[in-house]
Structures are given as C-alpha cells and as structure tokens.
Image (cartoon, rainbow, N blue to C red; front, side):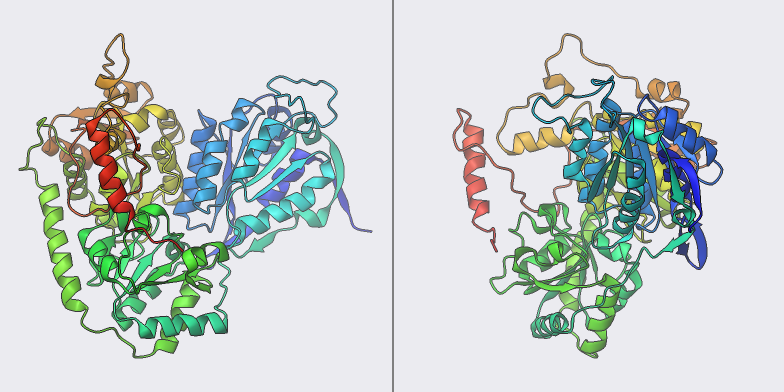
Length: 619
C-alpha cells in the first residue's frame, strides 16, 4: 500500500508547488519562482501557515495591491519567455476580484500564472461570511466565478482530495504552448484547513518541459511551401510566439536565406535586431512607414506567432493587394486559422526550420532596393522625431523626444524598457531601437493601465542583471503606483521615467481625431473645483524611491545615467506636451465615429471613417 502523509489541503498545495521543476540551459530550477500574497481572513490561517513552512524553498513576496502583484507575476512569466512562472494568493471578495484584471492580461497575452484566491466556506455553516457575495438564484456562485472568463482552466476546491487532479491539470495548462495561460484554483477557506492522507508520490519532484515543440503536419507544410514559392512580395510579421519559442535566430536566418523582410508586432518587437538589413520595424497602426509600405503591396503575409490583433492589421485595412494571402504559423490552432489563413499549426522554431529546409535555395527577388529605400526614409523620420531642435507649440518636449533622450542614456543591449498603455506604446513601438530578445517589454494585448511599475518588478525578478527602465504617463502612474514601494522594499531596483502631460493625453488625441470636443481627459478639461497640482517627485520619495524632476532633455539624460548608480528605485519626472505625437508612420485604426452629431467636426470625421472602412477585408 502506498505511503501517505497527512497534510492540510493548503499544505498540500505548497508542498506540490515547491516540487515542480524545469530545466533552463541545462540547469534544474524550480518552475515556480515564488508566490505573491496579500493575506486576509480567506487565506491567512491556512494557506498563509502553509507558505510559512516552505518559505525557504518557495519564497513569498508581499505587495501593496492585489492587481499590482498579479501584474508582477504576469510580467515575470513574459520576461522568462513562459519557461518559469509565479503564483498569487488573496483572500476572498475584493482581494480576489482585484486580480481579475491581471488575469485578463495573462489570458490575452497567453501567459502562465497560477491564481489561488480564497473562497467562501464549502460547508456553508457561517454563510454569509465576511465579504461573501450572495447570488439570490444560485447558491454555488462566489466572486471567484468572475475568473472563469479570464482563465484557461478554472476549478473550485470543495474537498481536500480534489486538489490533486486540479493541480496536475493546472500544471499541464501552465506548461502547454497551446493552452498556456492563467489558471485559477478557487480555494474554499474551510477546505484549506482540512487534513487528508495524501500519497507521498504526489509530492515527488517532477521536471516539466515548457517548450514542447510541435512539428508541422505534412499536408499543412506542403500548402505553406506552395504559398511561399508562389509569392512575389512576401512579408513576415513576427509576433510574441517567436520569442516564446526561442526562435529569434531561426527567424533571422530564414529571412536572410529566402530574402523576406520582417516586421514586428508589439509582442514580437525584439524578435529580430532592428539593425538587421531585412528588419522593417513595427507594423500596423503604430507601425513604421517602411513596414506598412511593404504590407500594403505584399501578396503573402507570413504571420509567425501572432494572433493578428487589430493594431497589427490596421483593423484589416492594411493589406490592400487584392491577391494577398495569409499564412499563419502558430502553435495555437485558434490563432492559426484566423481570417481564412493558410494554417501551419506548429512550434515557430520547428516550422521555420522545416520550411527553410524544404525551400532550399528559394529567394525572392527585386526586394532589396525597396527595403533599403523605405528603411532609409524611416530612419530619417526617427532622427527628426528624436531631435531636440524641434519645439512643440507648448514648448514642452514630445514623448518621442523623451524616448530619444532615454535611448541615448542607456546601454540598449543591457536594458529592458517596460510600458503598457496610453500614447507611449505607439511611440515606443515605432521608435525604440530593440536589439536583444526581450529588451522590449510592452503589455499591449490588454493595454492595461497600471501594469508598468508592477510589471517592471516582475521583469527585474526574471532578469536581475538588466537595467529595467519604465516609461509611464501620469495617468497610468496614478492608476497604480503602490508597487513602487514594493520595489524598494524587496530590493528590485527599477528606473521610472514619468511623463507628466496632465491627464490622459492619448485618449484626448483620439477624442479630437474622431471629432469630439476636448472633454474629461486632460485635467484642465475635466469637472473640477480645484485644479490638481500633483508633485510626483515628492510622492515617489514618500514611497522610499529616489526622485528628481527635470526641466530639460539634457537634464533627463543625466538623470537616467545617474539612476543606474543609485542603490534603489528611481523616479524621474518630466513635463511633456499632451498633443504632440509622431506623425510619420502609422495606419488607420477602426474606432467607430457617431453617424449623427450636432458637431460639424464629428460629421467630417464620420465621412473620413466611412471612406477608410471601404479598405477593410473580411474573411
């Protein structure tokens, strides 16, 4: 008879987690890098006690906000290229619900995180317990059901033995390239404390493969080959799947061998060194003029590890060649088959290797001149955007000028830039000179404001040797800045460049572009009794960071360089222009404009909108 060990369900969870391993570059490592936890009555007594017992093997990190700590876990998984991940635990009620947004981030971006929210009592004896939501029509519902829509796997544990199949299934999802995403195990708080005789074999060390490499189907491979060989103007769009597959070398070799230019999505930026002769930079709404010019003429779009989000495709109005076909190389069938694409369901690296082997000496012709010409034009546009000589109408620097100053102040190959939402992602996508895989870390799948500072902590945890630089606007900073204090507390030093344009500048520009009046975005256009004058320098200092406010781009460069030598996180504040943006590059984005309005500006914008929609393709 198999030996057993008597543990509480919570203790079984922590003993199991610390026994799960993976191999990285020939070295065995725990696959869980730790647990983020904010304790409450729904997890402190049982799961808190269990985490204390294993704190040496499975470290627990305290945060200031549940959403923030979950963002850090998401960013850690992204920066680790999905090879390692973290768990997050909260109490029931608001603590659990605070993590739902971050679960959405993980789900959209196909990133592994294990969520362990506390839940109501399974025995229902004390109902309604503190923070319990009561559904008048369904006694089985709790707030944790909100996780169902944003979890790749969800389970509610109402008996202690149920944790065994649940944890095994969780690990399968967290490590599978196809199913990869967030897992939620909702832990009823009374069941966490209940004991069970668990088989010792359940806690034996197990080594998981996180980059299972599915090879292409023979028939799909043949169709893909035929499409490439027939194409005269193919264009590769590299997505995040190239990075997660660790296929960056294979991408560059494939492009070189077959003379096919490469553009990148937000998630795929840094999949190819942008100094490469065939690298065109970003694609789509926030794309370079070079990438978009070739996309307009392309007769074959080869998507690799991309889900063809609307920013990538210019809301499906970018690919204007009537003969354009889509070839989608993706490990996820759901993504590979989008928009009637020729699907090649496989690992990105395996797909590129097999395609290249079959293509042999095949090369496109007559493309070099176009690529060189378009890149030269774009490089000139970048220089113009970065120059400090141009003055905005307000006299304050533009986002692009700030980005230029930061790039001049750091070692790009030893740094990671982190951002998520607002106007900065568009400017960074166009302008940031990504060279090394993972050096560009943007959360733009969910475009979640507030991700930036917390996410930077996760990046620093995954890459402690890197100089982690956060670019964030005042609007996003105000949504979630509490984890700045966490970065100081746990010694994860980051540099935050805070661009203060006094409101939601990006959405204000979109409001104007769609004919709307300036309303409720910039602080000056919002309802107010007192005009806010926020001293971000003092605020950052109050949380333990070193902080400085600079008044020029030259001062900014000096402050960014100095921050590398500081002993803790640094915040550098600079006032910026809310209206200035890089006009070069870019593409139309489908944002519906009202059909009727008393504003003439809206009517004009609607006419332009209807004209642009005629270019959209539907499959």
